[in-house]
Length: 492
Image (cartoon, rainbow, N blue to C red; front, side, top):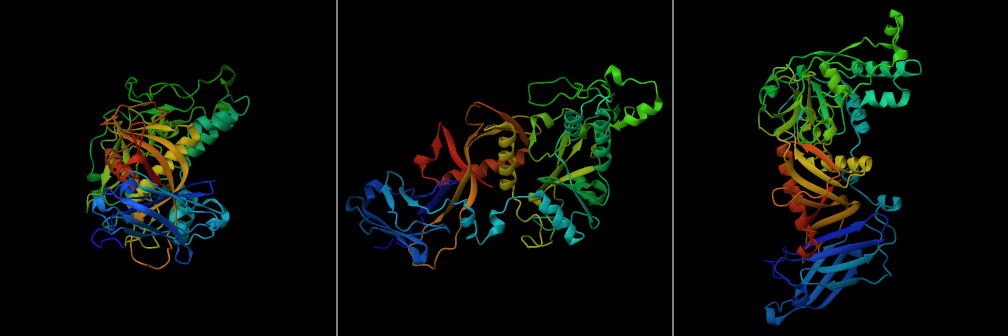
């Protein structure tokens, strides 16, 4: 009663589990089969010694499937309750099976069963800094074609904070020099001086590698799209409300109009005639415009920028590999920079570069980074910080909507694949952490409620749309739609 060898691989299985829930759910489906009508005498049993689920049924002669079906589904590494009965039912477009677990999938004891720890390990920036420092010195390569991107070996690595330090310092110490306001100004100056782009220094954020343009081969900056805006590179007084740069008025594009004064005016009690006093609090400190953009958050992580970090005076130029034309990253241009980076720095996305000349080697510090995982981690972080579960993703260049995502469950686990009728060896497959989402393409649907707007490049947006569309096919059609949107998932 085994399945026809010509069609034995067309049945798909998808296991799903939720954190803190002792249940494991299986969706088993075939695009051509109606299990409710075609599968008679359905039976599901667990083969514990082989970590498999055996699914058998007798076909319906009326539908020409009298040979029946015998499928073996690999069971992921979990702690099953062998004494609990297996619950199953045949529906119109899939077979559903429910198993009971002794412990939820995210329990620490279950985590000890994981063999591929690297696959499920979170993306941690602190690990990247330590790993790169231990190596001693690295070249960066294009992940796709392995061409070398750096002129010289990079030896110095540091973490790049992703907060508005001026606002944070003022919140902690206040803006008045009669209290702790002077500390705020000193922190801001120290921050800008410490994290300027310089040759030989690599600054790391959660998703990008920031290098000086002097450390990259020349042809990288020549392969770009667009030109910077032509305004003079002015200077701005730290703590004052004046700038020599003319800015555009705020439009309804979600961008921040940085012509508005972001710095607090100096209180009357802080105006002193003593030169030493003003020098002490550094109120006369001059900052170049690129440093002001840095402090205002306009040069932050561009992989997925929030609306508050998008400025009309900063245009992000996308970079491509000079050898294979695959995307690499971007750099900020405009304001008299003549098409070059405003701050002299280029942001390379970790999912597109490698620290090893051979793709996939264990020595590659960034091997765990993919576009999907980076986007998912940023999306979840945004939801935690802003309580934003309805996110509209826009094109960074045109500001037009690309797609909308609604986070359903950030604590899910999944495993999917194709079934086999062969008696294969025991399963060593493992569940992977995912985020369940509702996804809708803005081309085919209207934008609904929005809690947060974020901006990414168009190429990355199109790739994510394809990923989300394909992931929705891992569920039967009856479970793939909710409120006119696709039910999909993204790997963490």
